[in-house]
Image 1 (cartoon, one colour):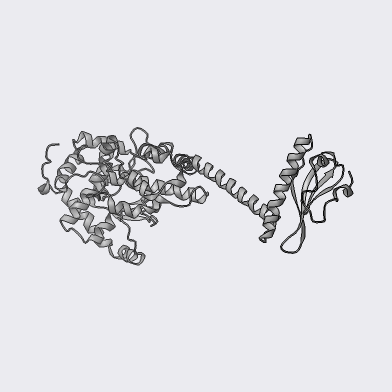
Image 2: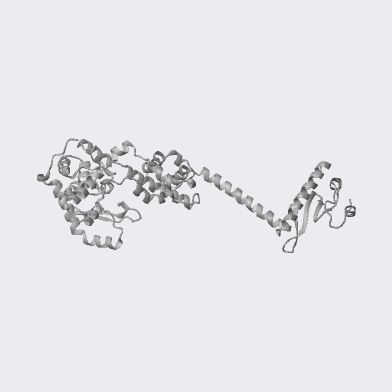
Length: 441
């Protein structure tokens, strides 16, 4: 079929070709208006030649020409003419068909990318993000016991509808509402004196870490756990007198009188903790390198001190009363490094459970925790009796001052007052005249 046989129509005419000509063509044939059938060794295809709005001559492919039968050749010709018509309409309004095709291709790709991102986000639930972070960052740095507690606290307390929701979909109001319903297990309440605010504080901190990690890895764009920090303080019940059950300070001398008579390392460890108003972990981990018996001081290194919010932990100097020094002298020789070694394994320190069991033998386990007895009882006594200025009391408890200048001043000025406060506390606990019988449990 020659090109001349298709030019019987006027120049500029459209729809020159017939289905039979398309079927039989063995060379390029025009159909008018820039549309042409291009025949090659591998097959035939439709193209449209046009002048772009920029003035540049361009060519756009309109698809393969199906010529396996006469009806299919006719259908292919119709489809090509329709596509050419749409391209000419674009040109009429000043749009280049090739540019339009590229735009639509990019939009389709963006839509597909968004679909894949959404699908991936739907699969990346809070539970999955938490477990991945736990495996990558928590397990390597914590003991197996504490690492298991870290993830189980979330699995046990975060409601299922939130735990299995896409992490990117979780909003701050929903998270706050979910955490407001959380209550600690009775076992945790009985053994640790745990209360809802403390449980929520730990949950929020762990969720905060998980969301920050997810943001870093591009799995979500916001951190609802950070957003609810202030709202939790505004909407949830306030903490009442500390986080742990504590014995009334008026009954503390009677308990200390019985505790002093009790044999064993656990009794000495607990008595020392009460006298120093120290955190349980700080006392259990005490080593002889931290103790200066001549100066009657105990310097707890920063690595073993509890950090507070964004404030880094700092070393804490404890001024020891005469009874506290007496306890330490009695411990000399039991272990070359550990002050209060475990009787079951002398290469390990005394356990918190041993002191908790001791409280049970003394009949007060249902009324106080070790932490509450050592710190909250001391704090209540100091404040209610005005034993010292508030800043001095807080310094003895190693509560950090956010103002760095003020903190430096406090450390410089409180030495004598802190020593006097702990001496007065020891005198209160050991003076027989002050021993008040404990009420029945």
